[in-house]
Image (cartoon, rainbow, N blue to C red; front, side, top):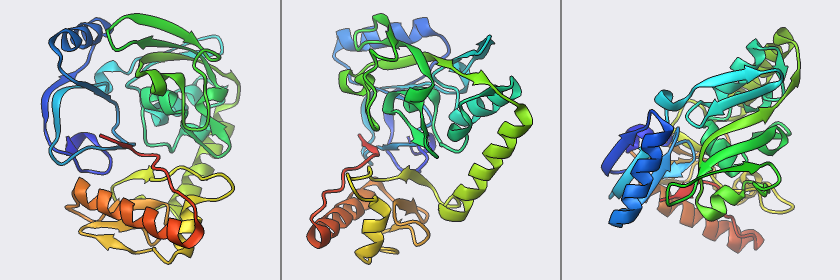
Length: 277
């Protein structure tokens, strides 16, 4: 599964379904449940840290084969496998504003909607109108934005294990040239501050109340700290990067060391933003 995660670690799946249609996703989930087989749904794998032992069950991959997008008026509907970058550019091409913040978030719509991904003052809850989901048994339901119970990096979908099939996004009229210019500014800001040349899972820790995780890690003197080939980035301490050949075990040991030292120095408990499988 290292080929399906942005941090480039993770062992093999017992079974993998590269989903194409909603019906086969529901069928696979329902069948796995009846047979007692654990199931894991992944998109871009940009916020995942999967065990080196892999996943002894069914992995359902929502990727390029499940990424159709369409526009009606100022509403954009997209399937869960569409990347946030694709969505932002598709919206701009339609002269629709509201998604520029998402251009550089390295994830898919499904994962982004589920964890309420955000950047530059924007987040998915601000543009979400409704979501089509499957529950763990494979039954379909549609949630309004209110029913999704969005909070900082949380949602009802995360709490109840709902699979996001697609989302209807409520946007506003905009100008393509202005939106492209704004996205380029965001890109440049990311390039100047983040270690984008190394595999990572993005910001590894959630922002603790009243603090910034990266700042705490830097102030604890942990920039450059390594375990195996996993390292606290010297460019941005909030990122744990893969220098080449790192294992999930390396990242877990590094995570634990960072949490321990920050707690000892500042009394703050850092909570991973990355989903650990």
